Image: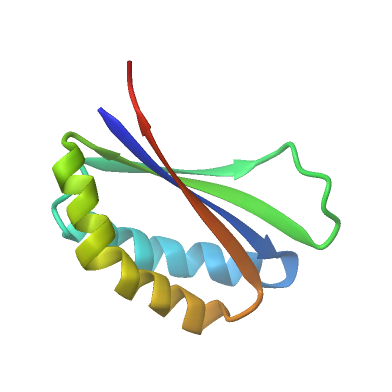
Amino acid sequence: MLLYNITFGIDKVIETEWIAWMKINYLPAVLNTGLFVDYKMYKILTQDEEDSVSYSIQCFGEKIEDVLMYLNEYAPQLTELHREKFKDRHVAFNTLLEEI
């Protein structure tokens, strides 16, 4: 099993709006690609920032080819939609992990 993790740092003032948008728009779009079998969304509790909050979006895939296809064909458009919606009120970084 592969885990594609996206960690987001979000301004606290948009947290509720961001969570709703992720659950209604972003995460269904990721699953609708058919390249992931499930996802989880976690709030990161070990954070010292006063004005922001962090979340981990974990998307589970079965084959590296599926994750690479997602990264090449779908992620750029979804990343751009997210960027346009939340402009400079967030930061994000990605990690790809393999279960051993």
